[in-house]
Image (cartoon, rainbow, N blue to C red; front, side, top):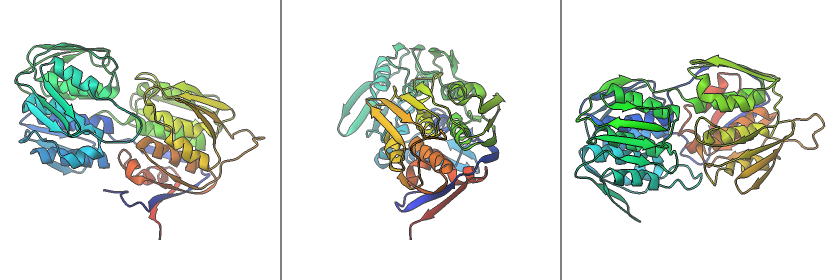
Amino acid sequence: MRGIMSNQHLKIIGGNQLFGAYEVHAAKNAVLPILAAGLLTKEDLIVENCPYITDIEAMSKMLAALGADIARDGRRIIVRGQARTSRVNDELCKDMRSSMFMLGALLATVGEVETSLPGGCDIGSRPLDIHLDGLEKMGAEITVDQSGIKCRAAKLIGAKILMKYPSVGATENLLMCAALAKGRTTLVNCAREPEIVSLVECLRAMGARIRGEGTSVIEIEGVKELSGTRFTPVDDRIVAGTLLCAASVCGGDVQIYGANKKHLGAVINALQNKDCKIEGDDNYLRVRSNGRMHAVRVSTAPYPLFPTDMQPQLLSAACFSDGVSVIDETVFENRFAHARELAKLGARIKITDNTAAIEGCGKSDSPYMISGGQMSASDLRGGAALCIAALKISGESRVYGLEYIDRGYENIEDMFCSLGGYVLRTKDR
């Protein structure tokens, strides 16, 4: 796994504008549940355009530990065969929250599952009750204690499930479980993200009977079995959004291929102004900016509103704006660790509960400046935010915590270098 050594870091010399083109890979948050869906069939599920990131490596290892055959050929991953055990690997669970996807897939095929409590980035509590409540309504018997989660279901029966919050992970879990349950399952107040739509499209290609994806109500008619298929997941809107933020604050002219403008509407609305023009279509984005950031006012919320996974990157860019920006984080209660790191370099950020007020240094008569220095990432998107700041600052910065960044960005140094940034992965001597 890349980035596991604590002294490994990115050396970034900022101050350059960004120019060029970049093609985004399939979305991490689409690939992970789709790989888990490979457990739902005895045939081959072939998933295309999968990036080389550590979360996908961990998911592949988790599936292999369950007994599935996993093969990788470049960006293609093949999942072959159903699970031969119901116990999810404890060590892998500690490293990633996506281990929760095994609940629905294993209940639907093996009839039981045992797993320790999942890990992942430390960005606040992400309760499992929405997952478990839905599974219980479909007939699962569930026990949760300090040792983990145990679920059993002699028979899964379709049910009407009203979700108290449109959880992406819970929606994906319940979709996989319902695909093979007896009868109709209706998910009300479910997630609407493009990654949900992508999972449904894959399940439908496998023979599932599902309708309503992209809306807050999805209906699933269970079938007896699913077949294999070849599928390309939706492209990664968060990687594309990260590039939009970087180009907006650094200035330049960047083309992003594979990105869907409709999937990034709230991000584009926050960034676009007279000094930053963004255009595109269903498979292409272009951002042209002179590097002058304007103050923003956003609140994170479920799709199609502003995504929490873009909050750190926008906050970082706002540090260089011409006014005071306000960002409300309504999804997670502990997602401002990056603000503390940015403050080490001189950024003026005040956190009150789940609101950040950022005084930008972008005015010509600004009384303060942000200088290069050392920062440490403690979560995936926060790490990307630190890179954006380092790219903007004139001078040298170092970003540590690459084990987090590598979870969702494929060679982030190559991505920025291809656009004219100076980013070098190196080690302390």
